Length: 434
Ligand code: NAP
Ligand code: HSE
Image 1 (tube, rainbow, N blue to C red):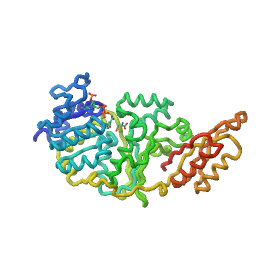
Image 2: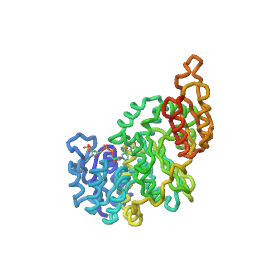
Image 3: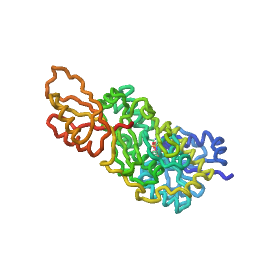
Image 4: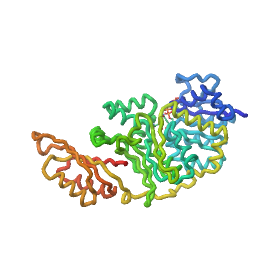
């Protein structure tokens, strides 16, 4: 059969990993694809930069547009990242009649409607397994294997960098800065790591999963989002004392009031599968009406796991499976959300709260009064003995775990509590996922 000729844009962590796998395992890939899959051309920003990969027989260029326009190429693999050049190149590739494989979640989350409209018009496939979960095949799982289900909820760790940072901070007492530097060194982080630590990357991935699981287009900006960049070590320590791990979770729940979508640091009970996900690993817990509970786990970032997903997509293009599913799937077909988003007045969760208060008589009572007035019930309290010698006015932490409470009520209570004279700093609030 005819060779599938691949043009690769980008030769960094993901592109380099994919190139290596294509060049190292041509026989295995050809067997699984039913025909040879050949890396024909690679475009990079700087073609003169020394590379650790031997590209003998492969054209290397600084002109990505030329690769996209080359009639000798059948499929473009986009691994350059960002949403400006990548968007233009992907649209050009589709217009030139090429299929596209991409690892770029920001691009799909922000420009999914435009890209999939173009792909449909051109009769071409866009495959994107590597965009969510690294090597974890969650895109295929939702699009194919679980397609018979109405998904009811997703709870997921989708950012390898954040999970690596939290694991090293809690497990080894490493500083936030040192843990982030480690994630960057290992190729897990985005070129701008702010996107990882402020939760944007997780929101991009959640928007893609929401499209697959709930047939709903949400813009990442519509997802309530908080990252790990403002977490304090004290909260990781108190969570541990209470028997919880803190994880950056992406949550999507189908509720009678609409979809409840959130990205936030969340307390997860130790021993629960999500709490035990370590380092750069990702995990996705899916609940479907037919399958029930399903759990996916694997390496979420880095060259080899992501190459596994990219080359898997290329094999799907080579066999024609990607084209066949693109013809029937209606991904991002409608820019308006098919399901409304649940308002905070309808969202319920348990919460971890850390107040910074003056160590004076009656303060705990006043806080409990405000919470009680808003119907928020206390499940447990931690206040460590600061000793009799500490001055009464010096601030001390008070940690409260609540029972289930309505988010809007909790926000109103915190606003009132933070105005009390005895409260010295903004209250920390972290949701609990049971
Ligand atoms: P990276 O290591 O920074 O590599 C980016 C590559 O793109 C470099 O080779 C760079 O060339 C090239 N490039 C940048 N702009 C270009 C342009 N205009 N024309 C041609 N080449 C250009 O990035 P990465 O970590 O591989 O990430 C790439 C994409 O995959 C992003 O969308 C990211 O979100 C996604 N992703 C990353 C991971 C991961 O673990 N890192 C996992 C899943 C998905 P030079 O080498 O010459 O600078
Ligand atoms: N920066 C991303 C992460 C890469 O750390 O998860 C994988 O998408």
